[in-house]
Length: 107
Length: 501
Image (cartoon, one colour):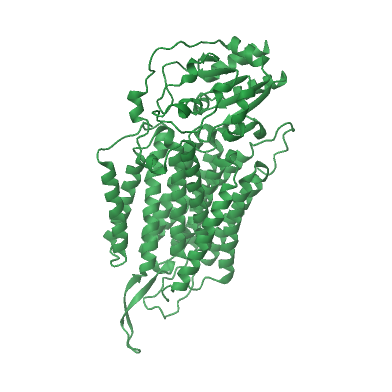
């Protein structure tokens, strides 16, 4: 296997830097009323770290690495399901004025 | 191998899930689009997980010592089963917790979730260290380069990957131990008051320098003790950093840890060259950083001074009521009469409302007043509660329509045309000392101009307590102020009774 080249590193660094800018503008556009759901949902999506956990859990070669991976899968899953579910629960509570409550959809 | 040969469709799938995460946050720009946004987030996560499972099916066959030898694939069914069970266990714990948690307990739930992301990052980092080939971040040392008699030695992790791994583990560990302390403080299982260690700045800076130094040294020596020391010191500093911060600074701490959990995911994303992780890490990292900035600005405190900790300690001694001043006590009936006669009432909820669980009776009061033709608005300070937006969620839970709820800068001009400013469980955010008294610890913090309202009602447990900043509040002693001394929920219930008579 080849060591990563500079170009590899620069291209992922570029994605990272661009994503920081996207994050900056997207987060400023979030209404302050939804800052708590914002934290809950960012919590859920930062558990995308489960990708690394799955790779470790699936790989042969090191039993300890596998167990660490499985444990990380459990922790990240708590966060993913818990984070999205609690966000959905909160968001469903936000209602507009003077309108009969719309039928709760898909929750 | 796996890493080099990640198929193009998988790379695209990770990109798609990254974009879906961006859309998930974008949806939060308005309550009407937010639920769709959340579903985008779930789909994105589903895509990332399925893609990883499919491209990394558990293999029974370990990679051979010599890289050139092709090796077979044999599906490890028990291995796959174990992964699915792990997801099921974690998923059900998370789902049940999310269903049961009380909205007042959101801050500690979020802190607990942050600690899990941090711990997961540490575990993934260690797994990558112990099995670097699986992550495609190592190469076997070539001992003899002779074409015919090539021989291989130990696995060498790429130096660049070592730095990324070290950073991921360090940030993850700080997130974990910091969040555990934040959780204990928010859940009331540990004193919320700042705990000051002597010489803590020196200890903290020293520990931080040691972590950076060791991470650098890790590129030269991939021994176990180096990475173990980085992990241990990082756990320690996360603990030391959060211990001295307490009380009103908790919203900043929670946002800051949110940011760290993002950077930890990003660092792991660099190790794995995974677009979804890098995009998410950047999003979450900047989200937490922006929220910390908003919170600091709303308290007129610099980020550094929050991190340095200890807010509220000095004030405990200096902030006693300076002298006995006269104040007026009102009854629920008096309050109900004034409220009923008003044209416009602005309700200012604070953390005390959450503690007393008074949001539901408060909404009933608002409904009763509206039925009498009173305009009722809710005003929320950015740092009200123990996390950003906490009050908004509690009001939404009590079915207060979100277009009745206003931010500080949107409503502050309206107090002059307001008959009653109704303060429930808030204190520092209405303290005029923030505007006038340069010596006050909260000087410069933007506050509500309640003193411009025709009358002020202040629900408070007793006259003894002061706000989190430990400062006396001139509003208590103003001519137009009526102090309603009781438990917030009890008082509002009594007002409701009086209103309906």
